[in-house]
Image (cartoon, rainbow, N blue to C red; front, side, top):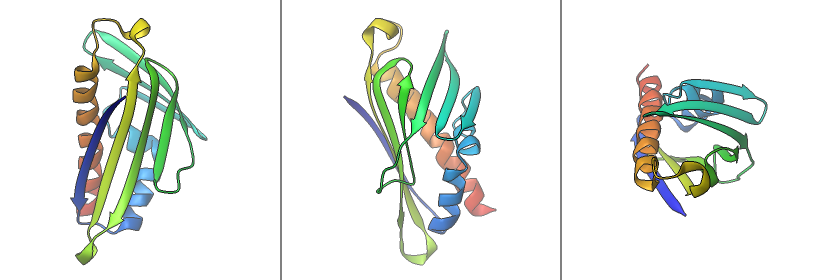
Length: 139
């Protein structure tokens, strides 16, 4: 299993960030995905990575420690989960932590994508989401 974890402390109250993260459609679009559809707990994303188009069917699941947690139902991974957590800090700041755990399905991915490429892409996506949250915190 591979893991990508990003953490950033933002000048924003926890509830404001919680509201932004749980607006799942907008929050997922902030990652830079080419298409995002949200229907209840189901999330469909399409992303173009190099020459590949990646389609993922995701499902939200309850996680007491997370503001948002989802797992892949269909897609290029053998398994993949992502969680977002919030931790209040002194002075009205909040630390946001995002963690993605994944295992690639070699039969689907092949030699074009490997864990290094996936990790790099995922860091970009999570950074874009944190930038989005940071922009809301400033506004």
